[in-house]
Length: 285
Image (tube, rainbow, N blue to C red; front, side):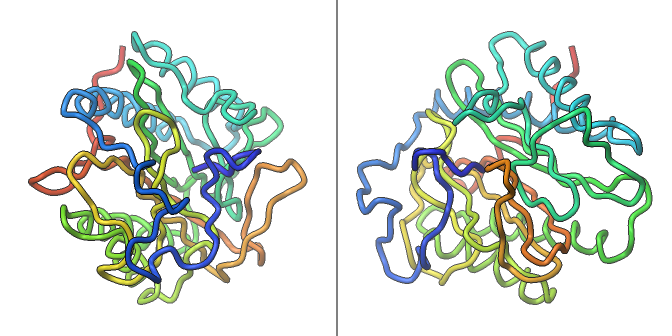
């Protein structure tokens, strides 16, 4: 999930993309790129590397570790797989290999050895992998040691929202069905979807059309066709939905300083239903 620097790859939502049938990011359905079976299989192999990376970084999240150290770990781990490179390194000028966002930071936290996680924090880990020319994208949020119950609940609700969104990604459904499913879980829990931040198409490029909103109306928006590959990524706030961007021009935070969680999978729409491409980790090299 990135906000592009010149509009390219931007995942900043304007208005409600599911409010009218046939909504598309730029109004041109031809820009949506369906993937071949071969391309999806390549993405699945890259997705296994991504899942293993998330697992490796997560198990190294302990009080006192710096996000810079975690970034180096992720970079080396990804590059340790032949044909794989970190997709985020240098993307739109981003300086890190992964995004590491602490507590009220929603997305795009810049890794640094000066940024240390502490007992009770939560850390969102957002990873992109380019493998054999194809891209996948995934994220988890983890607790650092023991956290307060409201943070535990935030993580669980966001996981449930992602699961609901994936379950709605059936062939013949629409983008609005995904957003409606995610939004319903979040609203029922009394939490809020982070404003203006959405998922996206992914595969041949790290960010493709269509946008994948985390709120919507059923049966509205672009129809889900076999071969479509999308990153579904609810970003859920404990407090208000409003966001702001810090002076570094990257880190997006909650407007009220409350915590936020982020979970994401790359999903392929198939005739049989949604296929999660970033779910299964491979053995570490």
